[in-house]
Length: 166
Image 1: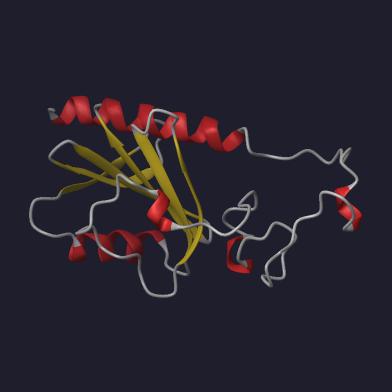
Image 2: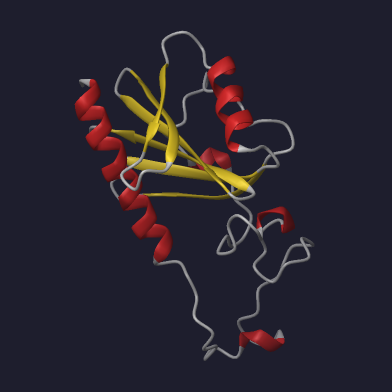
């Protein structure tokens, strides 16, 4: 895939992920009766939050729910760099057909430090470019074979989005 095609594909994929995440939001109308810890209440698993997600995730990903498992992100290659030290996995997800997946992390790193970390730790064969998403936000994006990936910095964290053509 050419670079112009990559630039079109990544924002479209990110837009799809944004739509997926937007649907996970909550309004203040609690008609389930779960707010008092009764039927339907979430066991926080000792995390100290009512969502079950790690406390570190509350700022960057307030809709994170439960304990995420990176093994659920099947598109993540074994040789892709581990997240930076002091990062906490908050949530994972993807499209129904498996063509796009994401992992959201809480992290103390700012955008420059985050992008530099991945640029320095990417193995050979991973093209990387600092560019902008469809909304003009800075991202680090690239590809390796059929895999397209991008990293977007958030306040208090970052998102890793992975996509394939198939």
